[in-house]
Length: 81
Image 1 (cartoon, rainbow, N blue to C red):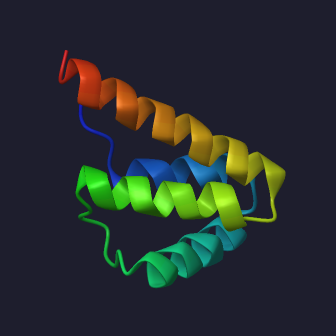
Image 2: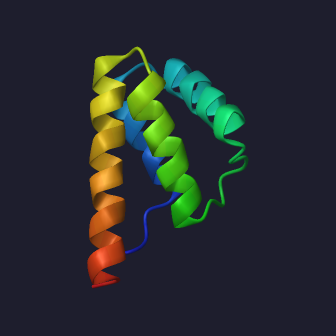
Image 3: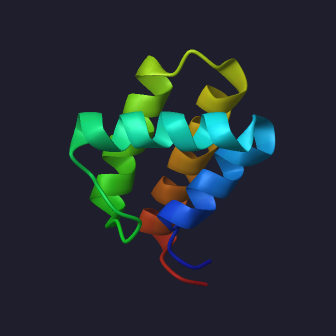
């Protein structure tokens, strides 16, 4: 399993919601966590994901963020396949 990327996370959010809304929420999370750009390190993805879980009003996007956080943890435990 490859390391998760910000682009994958954003696609996952867009899959469960309106793509424009997903982009807006991602932007809010990036500003709030000071994790800007799309070339984020795992600890930065974790910070953005935690913000999304705690602050996003859209339930499907919160669930998608939780799913992304789980994948991030699995990758941290087991590394690339």
